[in-house]
Image (cartoon, rainbow, N blue to C red):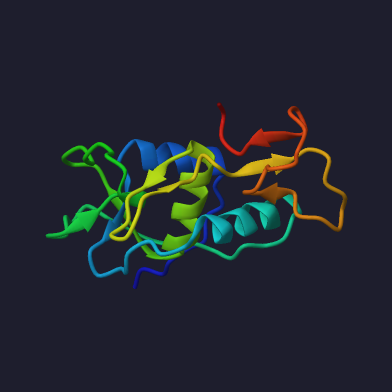
Length: 149
């Protein structure tokens, strides 16, 4: 009997796999619902070295009838014959990471949300949030976009 095995991958590998169309969301998963604020808190936890849990992916050659892309972004189809990794657990965290690190605008039913408006506060103390969404009152150069702009 096949037993699942844990694998560690770097964030850059995860992001690349998403961009190559190798990671997809099965239709039975709920929509992405995390706000920009929740995503900033996740990024803050990562920068502070806190554990964020695991992702459970189902690697299969089988094509499900209905799948979605991470964050609703227009990503390439998985090439025929390649494995697809379906997200079974961790979709909210994975989509938050992708949207925050790529500066994606997520299309929602009620409104679009621009995840490029997440910043790293370069002058934050240990007690403060390192990742913020409100830069009003912040001096230019005291913050950086969470994605490569």
